[in-house]
Image (cartoon, rainbow, N blue to C red):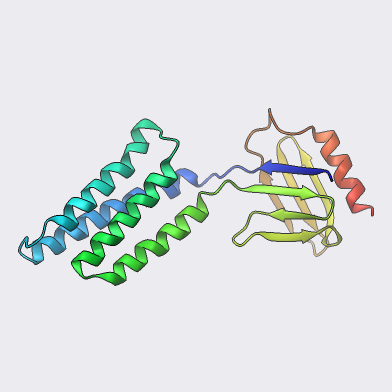
Length: 178
């Protein structure tokens, strides 16, 4: 069974990372403020938050390959710090943001097989060939044309190592003509 996997460009990835760091710093400031309001009874939540923010910001400087794991660990550590301070609602919000953040930073891969096309939305959308009028790859631009006149166009992340356009387009044409 023939299958093509195309990695799409995620043009908002840098913005998502910056928002994540901003929220980490905001959490640190919030925990410092709560620690101040409680007359510095316990420094443990603030120390945990500071470690989380420092660990998460290392990937900005060192381009760490484990940045998702570091960021996830930082948000989980912040969640524990918020629980210690007694603000479990903020902890739940941090975990919710972490879930959305991880989903947004996943590699968007379009899987095209003989049976269907799987598009990387949230949740993944399974598209039957019967719903499509055309699917083509041209100059690094993937175009999915639906029979209901809806069109999806996305750039492919790495054109040089990508598949052969002619072979891919011939395969899609065969599936559409079935």
